[in-house]
Amino acid sequence: MAKDNPLWRALKRWGAAASAEAEDLAAPEGDIKPVVAISEAKGRAVVRLRGVVGEMEMKPRHGAPWLEAEFRDDTGEMTLIWMGRKEIPGISKGRELKVEGRLAIVNGKRCLYNPRYELLVN
Image 1 (cartoon, rainbow, N blue to C red):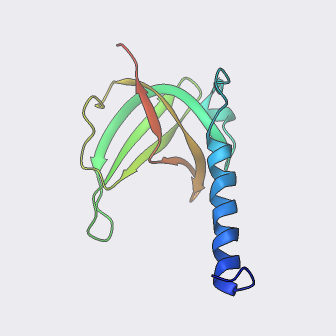
Image 2 (cartoon, rainbow, N blue to C red; image 1 turned 90 degrees about the vertical axis):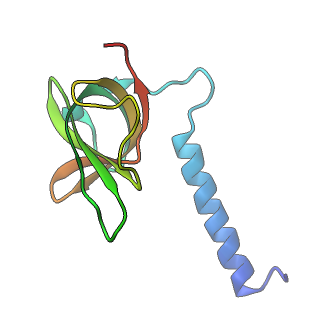
């Protein structure tokens, strides 16, 4: 494919954007993001949070399963959403987790979509 081809340029831009986002999410070895309080988490930032799972509910969207869980710490609460999942082994009401992902603010509420998670010993 010729490098002046519009499709080639679009693919190159898309690859650069995907690469930049991957670098954003990947922490260099030994550089672990600090855990922040839910109340201090800023929208669009990649955050690492520690808290407890509250109520969980399967809420299908457009025929696909979405598992939603309340998540709270001493400073606030938010929603964790796993798209395409009906359940996640090990995650249930009362379970303590560390979660990480890009914080979204949807209708004034904090959400993490498909967060990475670590099960903590209860």
